[in-house]
Image (cartoon, rainbow, N blue to C red; front, top):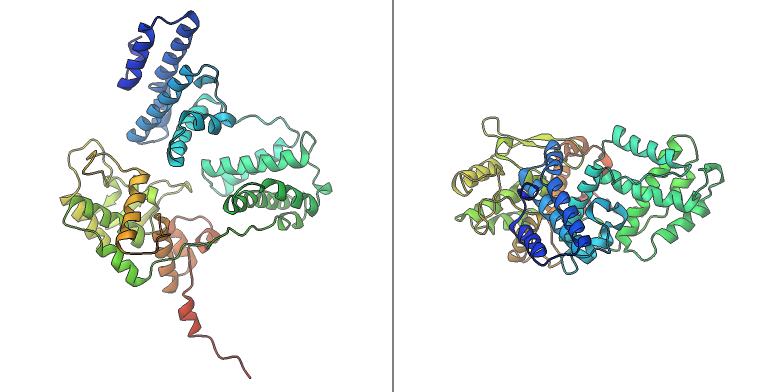
Length: 426
């Protein structure tokens, strides 16, 4: 038994010891044995599966801990299926019971761990035996091969496309010649009922892109995709970007005399002057910085492609200052940005980064509705666009494959445009 629990958390081992000391019944012994086997796989084969996909050691450790937590909860509640019997469909409802008072972000992190487990076990993709299943398979293959979308985007496309096909065709073959715009409207009304406008807009967008693929294959006309209604998101479609004065005020609010201030200043500059995503900032490693060539290597991102960015002097100086005088040295992790003062030397989490930016907005007396890091990325793209840079170079810097994605990030200075407007002729 000792070898089965190698690498487990101390809390897990103590819980199993208490369980055995309480004199379990025969069926409980079987449950405990199954739990031990699952945890042994989590800390051996599953960990090797993640490492083979180049996940960082800290990420592997996080996924292992979350899975052990879920496995122990399932053993304490035997009316639920064991970890080895989970299916993707029941995971969201299950995690709501496992983590009843935890934040949505925490549940999302647990869901990632469980989904990776299901992929490892070959139980993630639930087989579709409908006559129209080939359309779904071809579409996902098209997205992966020709558009290079990430696995998470593939999953969203699969779920929404499957919902549309189930609604429209059920157990019958896909007969596109019988489909009419009125059928599309009926589905849209059903599919967005009870959800927020933002969610409804996203759901119908995935279906619209699938119908465009069907049109590309020559099975239907363009009127089906055009029949998908566009949902107003209920608020501004793009976050308000920072003006030059606000940008300077934000950078000046960090105390660069402390290690934490040096770190926060350097991270903010990476998002403001390089357009990095929050996840890309947290994922930076020391070998990614080429100090001599003044270049930054961005590893594979959610689009499945990395990129190299030139380092402006201000960003380079900020990184040097933090790495030399602020970053904890001789730690086990090679991430550029680390935690301190609490849990000093550990990599950052997304919540720490978002909290840092939110507090910086508050210190600068920016609007109370401002939050999140993506506003800085939008500011970077819009500043380049306002200076006359073409969309293609901006897309390359942002790591976008498609220009329509970049268009979302660029905003036109309406005040400057008013100066070009001529009076209406009389």
